[in-house]
Image (cartoon, rainbow, N blue to C red; front, side, top):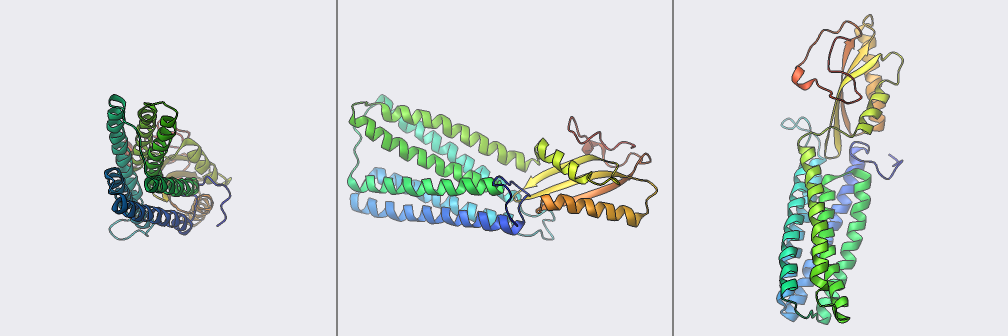
Length: 326
């Protein structure tokens, strides 16, 4: 399926297309992490630097996180089974939540290091090997973040979003070190920790937003209003459809689940009503190929209250009142 717009989001790509994109970028993430682990291991062996050993440990954690994301997106895109009738999409949100935690931990560590540097300024030194590894790390991570950003715009993947935030944290930390080295050369002694504090604020905000989105997905938050309005418009794009209400939506990894009640002429036969519902489902799925759509028919003006009222509240949404007599 052609990608009409770069910013597609969950449900708007066929599952196989989303799987290819997220699979490709998560494999790239694993390759970058593995390359940096090897490079820093060699650098540590040659230099014996404790700082390089710490960086090696950090990259090893990155590799574990990238492997977690790789398997999470594969599992999330796997078909539904007898034990998971709604699929496995929530695995992406769990992986994203883990990445948010790692970003927050990275920010906490950076606070500690920045404060130590601020209260006890020390000359920054870096050998040729360390600088070379740092330059390699920045170049590879920058390319990876660019690829991840493109994948997020195409798929809306929470897991890739979390992985991108994690690598952006690493990229920021490395660039702070380089910036601190450059500014230290011109006599600004506390430039390194001050830049570190600035990055910390951004990292904590990133961890918050990634974690918030992951929790929203786990809590089955409704799709944005513009998406709901589009779904209603597609469902009602048939003069035989007399109204739509009690729309419920949620995203789960690359998939979305849509439920609604559709008002029809009460004199229609079951066969004709079914055909109208199938046509409406097809219109919605043409725009959302990874959607699971369930439509309940209501006879216009004759629908007695039914269903659990606890789940029948639309609030202030544009989908209309809860399931009341039409």
